[in-house]
Length: 339
Ligand code: PBG
Image (cartoon, rainbow, N blue to C red; front, side):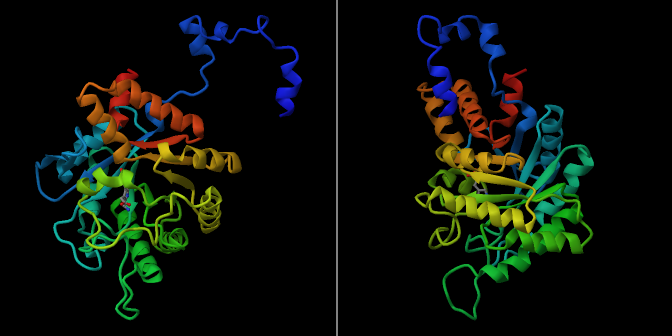
């Protein structure tokens, strides 16, 4: 307010004409503060077992489930384009109640990480650490027989998350990203990694992850729709006070999170802004999720929207709100568009 009061008196029309900042493309460029660059972007990739498998995800045109060999090539391309990194999601050959594939050295993500790091040693390979892709019930953790409750057992899941993160790190993952919204997940994973000899591996925590309908297309991509119920007992309520996101971040930072994330992005720009203002020194990521991508694709296919313009405007808005890192299915396109 001070700023406004001080400046209001000497800045009236016609002395001040803000259009002077817009009349010339070079002037506009000069005063642009927000620039999206490929280095800010992380590309989500989906890996499934096999060789030479490349199956398009129908709800996410241009995105594929890839076998580890083709995924490794894709990671190489992402690195060549100057992207910030990739994040891997696995679709295992078999699912069970405990998501066993996720904690196996021979599991699909571990195999993919090894292939990717062999093909592109310099690429930043991040793994999503969660159980929903590996459990037959599709929930982000395990259920405990003892309690008999139809709700994910938080503390039993923590142990498994730590195991999963260690298995990924052993395979060569450069960073892990827990997305299951279990209380204490960051601390459990940090302890697990430290004890296993990976104190240098950073944790990017999905700190403020909402129970969102914008994940619809992803559930086809990762074949992980919950078989019963929903995720509202662990993911955040979109209508909760934004300060609940602040509490989530406080806890994750105290437990050792290195990078925090808000997800989805576009409907939660207020949350991004608030977290950035509170912790300007903490790297903040936002996940421009599947629904945010697919709805633009669908409209563009009908000729209703200009995909490139809308994508760049969306990413610019997410960055302007305060996210320095963006996970986006447009990451490769952006590298091409920006030349
Ligand atoms: C799994 C996970 C999900 C997404 C990322 N990690 C799905 C979910 O929570 O239901 C969604 C990503 C997207 O929609 O692009 N925990």
